[in-house]
Amino acid sequence: MSLPESVKQARAAVVEQLVQDIQEKGFSWQKVWIDCLSPRNAITGKKYTGGNVFHLACIARMRGYKDPRWCTFKQAKENGWKVKRGAKSAKIEHWKLVKAANSAAPDDEEKENVRPICVGVWSVFNAEEIEGIPEFESNTDKAFDDYEIFDIADDFVSSSRCPIIEGQTAIACYNPVSDCVNMPARKSFNCAQSFLRVLLHEMSHSTGNAAALDRPFSTYGTESYAFEELIAELSSAFVASEIGLAFDSESVDPFFYENHAAYLQSWVSVLNNDPNELFRAATKADAAANYILTRYNDAHV
Image (cartoon, rainbow, N blue to C red):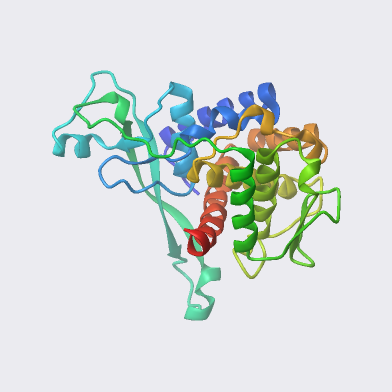
C-alpha cells in the first residue's frame, strides 16, 4: 500500500493521540471519543465509512468539534457557505478493490485476487469551520435508564447471528468453535451499560465467523489476537454511537476484560509497530458494526 506523505502524517498524529489516551485513561478512552463517532457529509447527510469514520472522529476529538458534519471546500462554495480563514482541513481516503493486473482468475475466485488501492485523498472541513452553514440539529442525544438499556440488549440478543447464552459462565467470550456468545449473568455486572458494552464487544467478535465477515481468529497473546480485540472494541463503540448511547466512565467494568492491562498494552504495541493498523482495524470494525446494526434494525426498527 502506497499512501501520500500527508496521509501518513495525519494517520500518525491520530494514532499518537489515541495511544496517549489509552495509556492515560485505560478503557475509559472511549468516553472522550464516542460522541464524535458519527461523522457525515454536510451536503448528503451520508455517513463516512471504513477508516474515515475513526479518522474524522479522532480529528474532531483532538480539535474539540461537536458538529459531526464535514465537506470539501468546493461543496461549501457550491452551497453558498464560506470556509473560515485559517481553517484546518482533515484528510479522507477513497479506496477501491482492484483486481490484480496479472490475474486471470475466474469470477468465482476473483475475491482472492483483488487488493485495496487508495485512489484518492480529499481535504474536508468541519462544519464549525464553515460560515453560513445551517445549525446542526441532533436527534441522537438520548438518556437511557437501566430498564431501557436491558430492553435494547434484549433486542440485540434476539437479532444476533449466533446464539447468546447468559448465566452459564463467569466469562464473557465468543467461542468460534461452537459459534456462540457466552455472557455472565446480568446481575454480575456493575450496571446495565456495562452489560451492553461487553455484549456488543462479543457480538462484534461473532461477525468474524466464516458464515459472516470471515476474519481469522488467533491464539491469545499474539499480535493478530490483539488486532481482533481492537476490532471488537471499536465496533462496539461504533454501534453504541449509532444508537445514541454514550457510555459513561462507570460503565467500564475491567473485571469482564481478561488481563485488563495486558489488553491495553497489546493494542498500544500493535499501533506503535504500525500506525496503519488502526485504520485497518477501524475499517473492519465499521463492517462489523454495520453487520450487527443491519440485523438489529431489520428486526426491531
